[in-house]
Length: 262
Image (cartoon, rainbow, N blue to C red; front, side, top):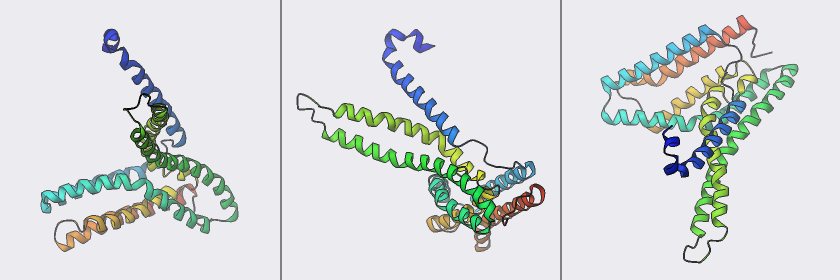
């Protein structure tokens, strides 16, 4: 409303705002089409409730551990590890998913494999979009930097460099919006791997939690506290997630007829 009232003074702000809005809307639609918000083929309220309780309990125990034994540098390190997990999760998921899918293919029967292949192709297409976007962002950014260096303001004409910079900046802006909208749903859905097999999200969760535990141990070392507390903090989190994962798989088998070996 203020922009409309001050339009004579702020007319130059309308084109960039409209362009950003159209880019954000287009990227959001594409991201949500590729990665729907449903990340489980079978929604079990009891499993979801236990997962939430386990997550909140783990967060409370981590805060209690820092409050009792932590130092200021431990708090900063915990924040760094949280940011590191956000950055590492998509590539780690892309590396882990093919391994888990290969194991499921090894266990599955011939009829199940043929059905899974079609679903794997759809998951690969969505993952290819994400990998392509992540790869294109630094390439376009590097091209813009190189074109900016090649410009010669001292000469009378800057040539085609400004237009080339604009041609690279527009898709770069769209890709940044796309990654912003797609990263969260892509991680939650495991790049649509739930469509491949109903138990795949649980298996990926159990795999990733141990990989994160190893990465955190190598990157940040042991948590603060006595040796017994340190051992429990390192093993307790992944072990509790693994227990919930196998309970979920057991419920999928007994209540919904989802078998790992079929």
